[in-house]
Length: 104
Image 1 (spheres, one colour):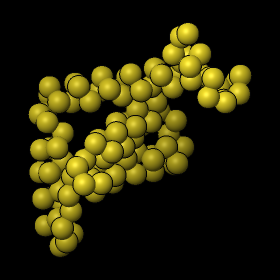
Image 2: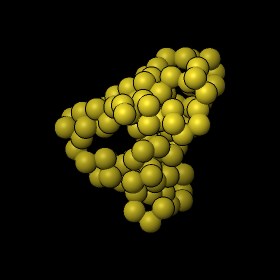
Image 3: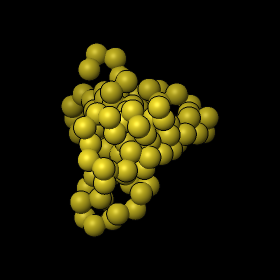
């Protein structure tokens, strides 16, 4: 059974494109790996951003907050009419990072 068959076996209608979902998730992973190679570990990068934003906002933030707010920035772009796949890809990546943060 292909992964697409396994996905569709979970009750989604025949018009749903699981291959597209699977491709997006694979691409999001590739973007995260590329970002790690280019900028370093995501938790450290997000921590640095959290420290900077915390000073600006005058309240504590953590890595999870930053990942969620970056995802929301991408959702805002999508909601404003930008159907650019990169916004969706980035939002998925930030949400994946948020889900991987300890303590949440």
